[in-house]
Length: 82
Image (cartoon, rainbow, N blue to C red; front, side, top):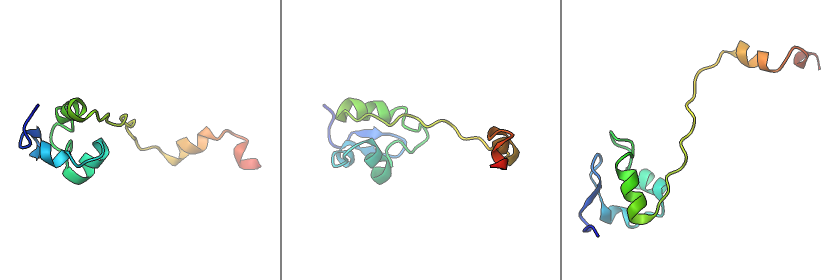
């Protein structure tokens, strides 16, 4: 097992001892910045999952801007007459 000063998140310099008090992946991101660096959790996410059994949340689909006319067209032609 790694020592308490072993870096789990190299991008943000987060040691194992800082993550020991966290309750999960989201808590580690919010309070210790683990997974917030350049790799976006690709390296430390797997390490945290192996060390603590944390499962990162499912990625959200990307958002893209939509025109109002496109959204209005989804309602159908009879939607405005009700």
